[in-house]
Image (cartoon, helix red, strand yellow):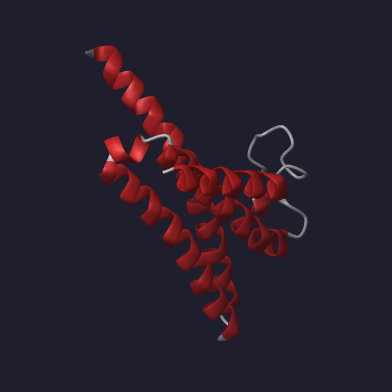
Length: 134
């Protein structure tokens, strides 16, 4: 268990150190579609957001959240994977010359990755609300 905690903390620190210069206030960046070069920005944002989502998952897994709520953990992992799959679909569409479809896949991937970053926190909020009702 100690090795797993150490690895998860190192993963979290590594991902945060990659993100920290860009997101120093710990808020999510604006959507890429609003950027001047949206189609370049979106690809970079997806990579950053999925790394962040992976780190959030690991952090909350170590804290035991997904042990208590395994189905929600599985859905969170699946959402992260879907964001990665959407990015791959975007690349495939781009390679076949379908730029419009590629762009749509990229923005869907970004939105999915953003959501997956927040999922562990939303689960914590849901659990807290449920415990207050009891």
